[in-house]
Image (tube, rainbow, N blue to C red; front, side):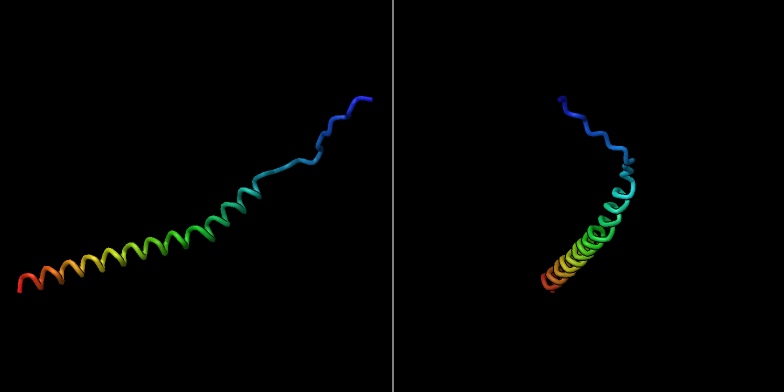
Length: 60
């Protein structure tokens, strides 16, 4: 007896899965990126202040 192929009759809409994946990305990844940007800005300001202090000490 030949095998009967399985045919799905239930329609599958991937849009809710894509929406959930996107929302998870926004909820998890975006705050991490924002913290990383804030740390880079803070480090940049600290390096700039340190360089300015070193320059001021050299001028004295």
